[in-house]
Image (cartoon, rainbow, N blue to C red; front, side):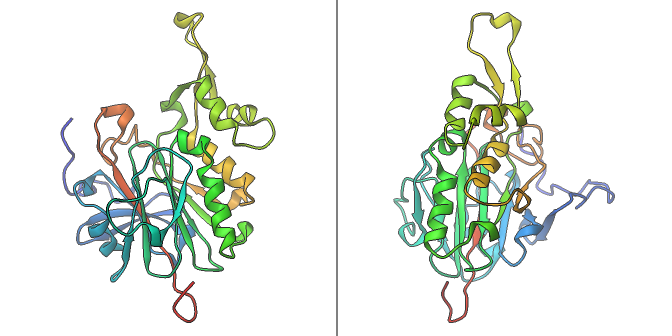
Length: 274
């Protein structure tokens, strides 16, 4: 499919622009990116497909001047690294980053997987994680929260934004996948996932494995809640990457290796460090 126009909102009716409750489109010279209102005070952005070809080194400048840039070679696992260990190619193989000082911009990318940005108002530290099913099954979010706790965070005061990702109705997986994600959850994890998702078995697939509509962002929220973060502090973007072709790349929809970036900046506390 062709790329959409470079001015993504030029033809939007005024009545629909910036009508998302809890989320705000921010306009700048380079285009528009999405912010979660709950992360107010922390520079951050969820960028769209209209920023294709521009990586974190350029995008960081749209969040704030003078930032250092930290990114990963994402491998769909559970490893979380400190920002000061992700400063240049070759980037570390991991799926989560935590800040260690102010002015660090942390970046993850994806095309259906959930970008997870976590902010700690108490210490100024932040985390950015790549929330695909494999990384959730490897416990990437619980590990990120543990690493933030090691730096003084209290889970009950953390703020989380789950960015644009594929929605449950558009994400059908075999039950074995749901079960692997469920293994990281407390209690009967599979029943908890099914309670927020849907079980589907095509009658034409008699004898084939059960398939679920996996709500991957819902699964991410459950893993975060199991780590002590209140459900009210976890904010899920309403956009589905699969259905919003005008705004987002989707691997499931297009089968193209193209991604959008999401980033967040750690704050400097008194004295210039966190």
